[in-house]
Image (cartoon, rainbow, N blue to C red):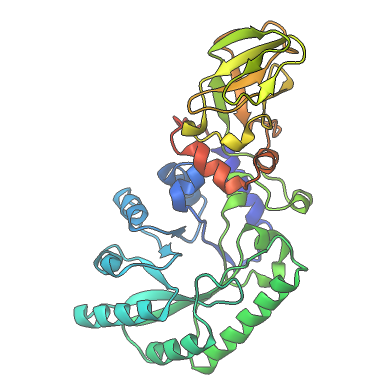
Length: 360
């Protein structure tokens, strides 16, 4: 887990001394394993964790984590008892959530810190200006609801000069003025994810929410010039068998691949059921014996096939690298691009069922 530590430290190096880090570890830490990732980040002194489900909170509290757990994507009514019992920090993404939480806390005579999310142009989660005005009336002089944070989310933080990015920052600052005008002073303002940490230093404020970069992937090409990240997830598999494919013969379902010349084909028992995306058929690549080797044919449920014609002395049982590796031999960014997706999906998919081995 040294790579995870180094990535966090690299991100912290871009921050001012008064900005705290709330790592996003939802969705099993993007497929990397919730508790192992949380333990390493906790040792590194992060403020708390950003999560999305009550089940994640139960797991973290059950493992002894006592720090702040922020429910970044709002909450459901059925979660209210657990929010109080587990001492969670809910994010208000809709006015009705504030209303039912307020009623529940009054009934139980309990107080709870909250973060209010405002819609600055992404038009997904968050209160618009009218609902924010109503929320401020509920929050003002409320001893049950303690406004700890004001937040929003950027649609394209990896593009700092995009008009939408600039407009979102301006809108966020306008919303903040409304909050301050109501006499409320939240401890934290937070707007940026990994891309914002790297490209928008003026929007770091008091708290940042890194996700993707923690796990070693760059949110945009230019990011590599600003900091060095190391892949946290490395995915290995073993070759099951090797066979010859004569010229003119086809391979796999479809078939989508026909050999023009005699090829040697390695079968690897990893398929889309294991999270290796089917869209990498005839597009993906692996690393073996110092060489990049192409994925050929359609990826099936439990099998992918590699062209190992140019690799001498390859045998069944040999290990092949499908993702990551020292020196970024199979970069997640490149593999995701070839699959027509993003690193987030790649990590979550490959990490969903794989046997994980953690090394410091």
